[in-house]
Image (cartoon, rainbow, N blue to C red; front, side):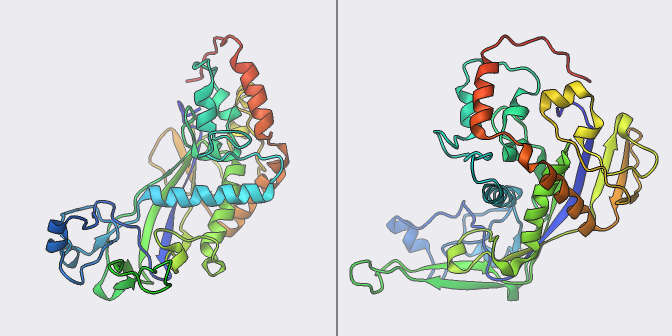
Length: 349
């Protein structure tokens, strides 16, 4: 379904730190050998925020205070929170897999697709037999609909960086464990990272699920979403705010007047809708306004009011949430159809 462009949604999510924050630099190795310990200067941090440029020098952080927020880190937080929301709304029977589970009843979709004997499947098989979350974030055999870019590098001022010292506790005596002290260099409150997000060939209910995640990012004081290392230590409080939202339609769907809010279920033929198990959108009008686009095969529209847009998307999720098959039903139907010969189906260009 990604071989052609139908629609897309673009926006920037601004993440602002609301307390100590660190996504640790994985290339900074802990001093273990006597030689490494001898090189370590007293007071140097044991962990640093991640940077694009790296030199294996613990004092280098004093010269280079440019940090960024990896798209993979944001993606992981968004996916795990979205899974939590789906399991809360639709607890039994489960409609959302556990990506790390190798066994039923919540076997990860990647594992299940990998276990199928017939590796070649008809178009639409992976999407229609993936769980609710994997349809958006992808799995083995099913490309992700959502792309989250790394934030641009941010020059963090010295007054927004600080040390946090920790000690190890001896589990026998309850006192301080000798030699187990460690120090973090953290980013303090007030630093903003801007991550561009693109959802291509979306269904409106998928944006509805994201609306719940966006809401929890914005209402940071609820404490439902934390990011990075040390969440149980009080690190990781962030607030997420969405900027301008741009909706684009391609090809025949590139309308010349502000259209109602349309998704894949509104823009493809009946055969393709059935093949991919696409859900109908709400078709709510009056949410979009003209936006400049220099691509002749594409028309882009700007969302007038973000709050109304997310509310309309959430309605699409509420409308369709009872129509999703359970994992057990998907796996049973998928196993049967996977055993059948693959018909020759011509993909639309």
